[in-house]
Length: 547
Ligand SMILES: *Cc1c(COP(=O)(O)O)cnc(C)c1O
Image (cartoon, rainbow, N blue to C red; front, side, top):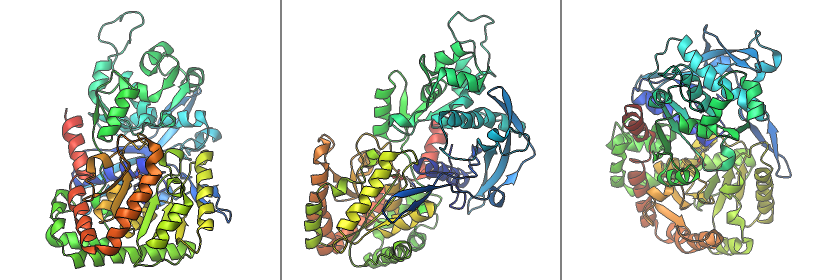
């Protein structure tokens, strides 16, 4: 549903889209024979404004499709509510620096041929109601497959990235009727085994709301005669059309995005063989130019083969520190520009940037304001935060307002800033310019998390709850620090966070710079070689696509 191709193209909302973008970038680097499909999202996801009371104001976030993609002549129709809805693909070619190119097709229904209401289907990412979402998924899955046919792509394997694309597998089913003329009653009249050979499914979240479910009555109206209802119920669940279940039932290779997430998914959907391919980030995209220059010095091919970053442990203290301080200066300049807050380069900077929603617990740090005050009096620190709440996530919006209230309470004591409109461009500055990357989700809801990987590549140290990818990368006091213990109840998390800050993280920054630098190097050299999208795509290619 979303791919973050570049900041000017508002075809993404957050981590899922950024991961998809890094997937495209690595596929280009590795010359994988792939084509990607997503929606045009002409109105974008959300431009976030923060008003003077600290409340999020939602704006549309339009962008110019014409500036970044070329309309193709091929058009296909899908049937929605009995009407033909025409879909036109636009081509964006993503070229990697060494020259390989990957086509990305952006699906668009803004066409004169279409009923005015249908012209909006591909406009707003995660906008509208349940019916709007299902229409988008029909365009993405069914329309997407037809577009590939119309353009002459001979696709061997389909990778469904999240349940949003599950209708593609159902559309594929229609191409593979059951080998025997008359299958048993109550059985599938299609050759699902053949479809499973061709489909791979990656699920991305253990959060319930992240799994689309539709009322069969509504779905039947929108999908018309796409698949007989009894057949659909066999595949997508008896009560509601569950897109995750549909994808699970029609995919021969299924994976979660970290080891812990695969375990959680197995518990949510017992009976399916669910593997783990831990996410990674595209190193050349997320490494700050000053670090890129350093890496170039000892491993000219690091962009293509981030494994070579294991050599970063040999960098000199001076080189690392001055590269980091440059990135920090740039972030502090951005903070000043966006919020007017003046922060200091010689005081540690904590950053917390992610989607503002309940399970991410952006408020955990403010559990005990007095304790926070006391820590900062002894060992000053600064804090920068950013993140959007989904327009219908009232809880997430309340968290943003709450953070702003804390900022007012602590003004003059702890330098704090909330940067509006968190996106790829802002993320690049944050993951390179902070000293400590803070993450406090409620386990097990952080499927993987990827921003901490971006930080690690820039020598920014992770201080994080043990969940998602961090369980795999964490070596206490070496690659970063854990908050809490894996087997501990979550009530203690805030106290544990304060203890870690007060007794470990801040003292190290102020009194043992040599060891801090050692950790920066360990963070790059131990995390960079493993948690990158090059390695991730090599695994998908060898274990899933060529299975
Ligand atoms: C990397 C990234 C994310 C995902 O980060 P998480 O660690 O999963 O929260 C979200 N939004 C943007 C803009 C990013 O660059």
